[in-house]
Amino acid sequence: MEKSSAQWPHAILFDEPRLGRVTLKNRIALAPMTRTSATEDGRATEDMASYYARFARGCYSLIITEGTYPDEEYSQGYRNQPGIANDAQVQSWRNVVDAVHREDGRIFMQLMHAGALSQGNRFKDETIAPSAVKPKGEQLPFYGGQGEFPLPREMSKEDIEQVVRAFADAALRVKEVGFDGLEIHGANGYLLDQFLTDYTNQRSDEYGGPIQNRVRLHVEVMEAVRRAVGQDYPLGIRISQGKVNDYYHKWAGGESDATVIFETIAKTSPDFIHITEYDATRPAFDGGETLTGLAKRLAKVPVVANGQLGAPEKAEALIASGEADVITLGKSALANPDWPKRVMEGEPIGEFDFSILQPQAYIKEHEL
Ligand SMILES: Cc1cc2nc3c(=O)[nH]c(=O)nc-3n(C[C@H](O)[C@H](O)[C@H](O)COP(=O)(O)O)c2cc1C
Image 1 (spheres, rainbow, N blue to C red):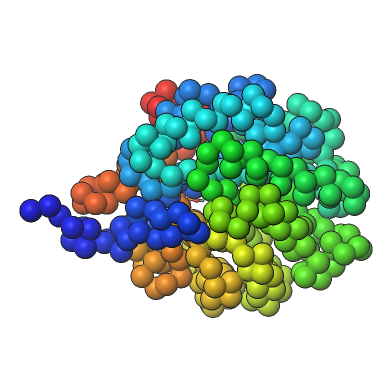
Image 2: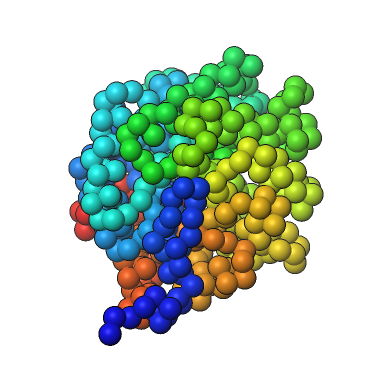
């Protein structure tokens, strides 16, 4: 007799959740991961198609692509990052989408604007940000950067309008290519998160000051993208406290900031919110709920949870408690491109080894 999903170990991970109109075949998805493996002019390659298809073959129900830049202005963050800003780039993604679909996977694109964290943009020599504040930390060597980040230029109202339009225009291209959905990168220290974050946003206009103002760009981007792609196209947004250049950042207003952020974003009717924390199972603030739990309770939409969930027991616990609907794996997926299959078959989960991202993050031969 065939095993039914109810008999699999960690069976709850193999329910079929919905993100908007898309029903997934299980609750396990690939986290967005920049691998700087596109051509110099930002086209997705055959290797990228094989790399992504491998996760679909390993039974990840959903692939979220690496952060992809929407325009030929200030959004590109890294050399060899893919874009979806022009026709050649659009064409190049069709292979990737087809390869994942052939393996019965679903694929959402993540759209990302690097803002002040851009360390490799072939279109512009300067970076832009809500305020002229030099980013903390240093450029990421595994994406080919070194030394301090440059001081960004403070964005004008026209710059902000251009960014909102760029996300919406790119979103339409994402839909036209045949992606099953779309995630806006509102997290991890990149442009939208720079607006959300108190110390990088020192504006005195309607985008700065109280948290209600600092979340405005998230809302404007989501609303413009929604208008572009239509009501029934799966659309979500990623939110975090920590950043690639400031891992341990916490929202100063704690749960009260979280309430404003999630309730405000909920009004844009996202099909999901993707929460990433260093460890998604830990309290977001002192001893309280997890950030995914808070998002779920306050936004009342499906929540995708990320952060150190490579042990099946941890992933299962977060789903079973109702704090999340889907989990995404980053480093554990790189070590286990067939993680869902391994869990189904009761096989051991491999440990992530940083050498995979050395000397740089580009996709390695054995990952195809
Ligand atoms: C090589 C690498 C590249 C990443 N690139 C992105 C990205 O493009 N967009 C994004 O939102 N997060 C990115 N992340 C963060 C992951 O999506 C994830 O949040 C992080 O790895 C923590 O999850 P984990 O504990 O499962 O690895 C990246 C992480 C890694 C390791």
